[in-house]
Length: 300
Image: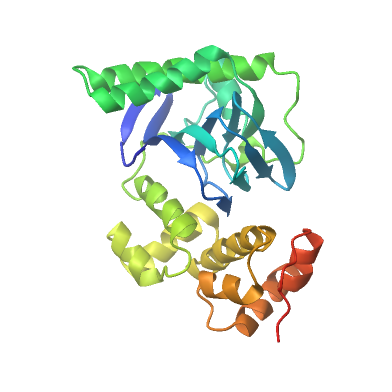
């Protein structure tokens, strides 16, 4: 279950948060490698099941009780264990930053952690459950309660950071990737979730025209929006999404190069193989063999 396009806005000190989605989903399909735009944060809590997180090329085990944050420009992908797939509580939000730093230590801790992973306290889990419960039941005062729970959740996350024994890896992005601004989010900013999901789930058939239609923008406006959020063109973003999906499919061990090429929407296995080699500097067969999952992947 995923609640999209919520546009729930609240402020803490001089920082404005806009929540765009809240979810509680069984993760059967892998989530290909992707990153969030500037000023974007995604909260993840694994309530049960097992899997793997790959964040900026580092691998982490995901187990019940794992909490992790993926902030601006942190490349990450998730793969569930087929035998015991994960169920994840998630929330995606954007932040409108002030020109001056917030005085609250909790807010500074939240904004200064573009990436974090660890075992969460029970109170964080309870807050995530309460968010879903409010959205399911829609009682009176629903938006006020959601805002209050989210403010509590941000403080709980900041305390989690402060108690953490593991430091944030030095190789991960720093808050310099955040864009300051005193105004609230623009309508264009609020379309980011649509952009992310389009590249994550429709990378095979997505076109610039179809994405522009989803966003109710012109082709030129859509290209500008992609450049603003990702510093990439539509074609660069689509290639990134297809190549990330290709890696996951090749690692599965039960697909040939030809079947992967077809699933990704390439006109031929040769076309896919050439594109993959140009992107990763190795053939799909070599990649599958390196991953220990080569099964009939040689081209004829």
